Image (cartoon, rainbow, N blue to C red):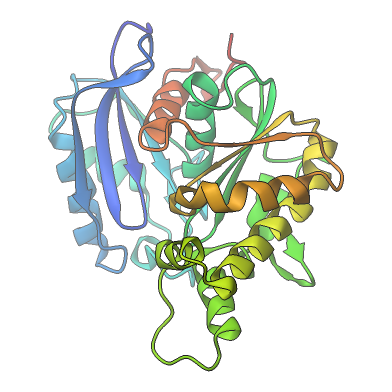
Length: 309
């Protein structure tokens, strides 16, 4: 596929599905970007019909090859959902999403190429965002969990001694507990509830906790400082091992960058010189990454990613 041809993409998230045509030469979506609410607890038919409806609204050309960014667990080579006991998309377990989505598209695609949503985000930031110019970069998406992409020349590295198991930061542990129990929406809200044990009512969301910290709430500030210092300490040895020169942070929690950058930086300094940066293409990086992934050559029956030039 030539870079002058727009590439159709889908980004399937925890609350929405986004469809767009992406101009790889211009490094940006073109035309209308469609974003529809998605119920991850719906039936398989409801979920697939919603994704198919989004795809139908962007006017992709016939016989186009789509890039599809999907959260794990997922068999990306075969397009099979492996969601089980993860709190979302459970009805898609064992389903061939490639075949099911192709049936729902207005024009039959030449193929669908799946990749992890965090990898798509990282590739997008490498192509045209905060990771541009860094050969070795690590990109994190912080929302309900901790998504990660370890990139070598823009290509995700998901195995080997230089990265955590499966290239997944969420599998790391801090203070004997999974990292996500400290740095995630749930982890931060739980910590704030513990810190304010005398208060009544539900904990605010992370945005609310950040607002309280800015207004002088010491409990809120301590919770955010502790979470992001812990993130830096946990990631630092892996950044050093991977020889990463930059750590990109995206996702909704990154909206509190003014509060969390310094504790994250202090945590990283324990064993890494990587520069922490907030994502620059938070909205369209996954779309750009999915488009690039789709546009790679097909070799010997398998789709293989060439190193970015």
